[in-house]
Length: 391
Image (cartoon, rainbow, N blue to C red; front, side, top):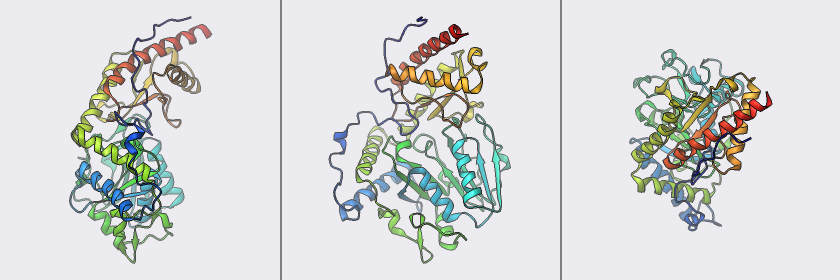
């Protein structure tokens, strides 16, 4: 039995996945027709396209002098693992975890690198760990924005400028959307498909002069896989940061990333990207504040993400269900909206508490999020009515 009326307007683009994220507005395959295909990426023109992607990234992000940027294999995961394997072990490590990706770095530091001096500082989904506990005489690993919890660090003020250790920052869902104080960052990683709606498989590795110095003076005790090696003979392999990638990149994906960077430049650069994400997230948080059946997963408003907006269902009819039942309810909402072509891929991450996760980064249009809220209300009313009938 129908209990709610379907909204009259659907989102023009129903792609709200948190990765890969929506393509930029106006995107089409025709934008990639000049991709450098069927040739070696090591040819002069191929290296030039790769270097252009690096140079445009550095310019758009406003990297300080002395900071280097490289295209590396295996997306953000590959970039962060590369940094961990090549630089950790010189001193103790503090690893922060408050969602699944931070937990992943803890697992690798513990079980793969087997770091002897490792402190893990954790918090439950929806909260940040105590940042005051972090010891910056040690290396520090953390995600700037917890994609699977919707919880981000509010700023970089908790990081001292005179730290002895290095900061390793997974910023794949924060870069281009949240301010990054580069003087507080030594290693930063992200991926094209999360940050700008690009295609998958390519990571970006940004290094500060302090991180470069670490690479050139320190050699870890463990073997370094070839695909992770950034130095040779104790010196940084400079070509990696000039478009001479470690393994074969996709020039089609590179062209797509260049298209996204060009779009970003055309709308006003980094400030415009951040403003779009802020405005997008505001739509959902304002709606959630006046909607009785859900609330932000992030407890503290100062830590709420403006990209991966995570919303938990708080209606008593749903919270009374066991966790598996709540998860099934969320999947039902996702399925209903998918069939209506109103929203795709909005169920929360499998490792997180049951919730809806909706991407609000800059490639999403504000009007589509405004249209989505009505469809969310419709789907919830329908699914809740089904619960009542089944009782």
